[in-house]
Length: 295
Image 1: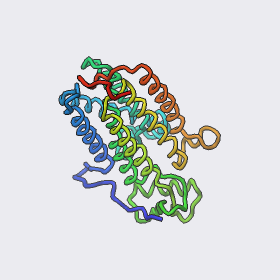
Image 2: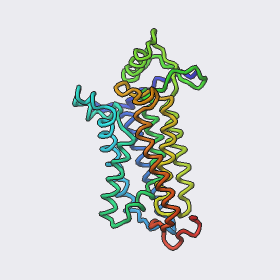
Image 3: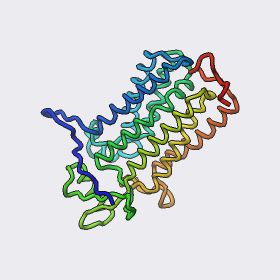
Image 4: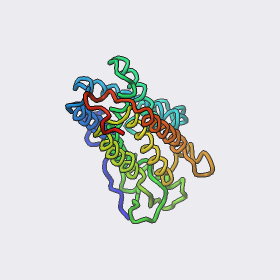
């Protein structure tokens, strides 16, 4: 098995201010999304302008942060916030919900589309291939924080997590899991579910959507594919990820909150994809060359 490296979650600090890996990963994710969007906008058949991309990424970033935090409070962390209201602002300790962030981005995209007089569906399609790299970066941040570990395993690719040499945030999470699993002395052998999510929900999602959107597709087809791929990957990883202690398994002693939130994504994505290819509406993200190769 692989020893978990004791990486300091704080890159450096100046007085009371600290730059953390978790926050840096969000910056990397937004920067990558902006760069990728700029590349797509620069295509000769694109209807997007660089300044529109800049504004869109700003809107999306606000949606991710506010939606992700509010979603975590609503779906997972309500009890923690009630016990300690300052938890709301301690984002550097983790506590972001993808599903909440997705809702936040959808609302932010709706505002952007109305402001720029673009079709809401077209803006969603333009955004669809962009989040994958950011999701991957965010899961690396979770790994460095020592959070979102998976279930105990003896698999050779599992991680050995000994809290003794770890930094306080990482050690505290390891000790909580040891108490939960009844492991004494506390040395965990667990799946790195945060890395599984980074590879599947992040890199794989990005590759599939980026290749899929290289040619014009019917309106909402990219959005539908995004919902399906993310939903399936998240649903699968939840089988080895440890559910939040204050939630546990919600149905049948194996269904988690993540799966309950992901299943509607899969169903909605399939419906949207079917509608997109049945209606064959031309995307507004492309100019002269529209759906010649889309079907």
